[in-house]
Length: 69
Picture 1: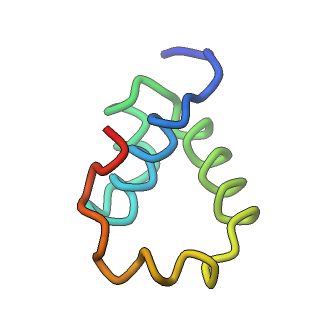
Picture 2: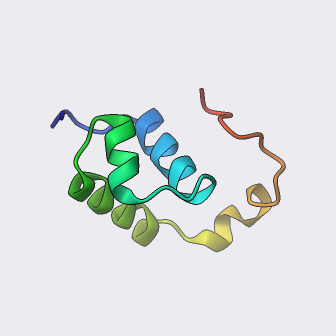
């Protein structure tokens, strides 16, 4: 497991795995080489700091999965 700072790409991948693939925090952590608690903490901060209404134009499927890669 790594304790390196999260990269933007890792955060986006974690969101994608959780929101589109329905993976648990533990499964996302295994995929990214992070602990469950690390994933949980990061995604809670992202959810808290993100106003979902600001993203609504992008939540309609206009961006393909993995657009950041």
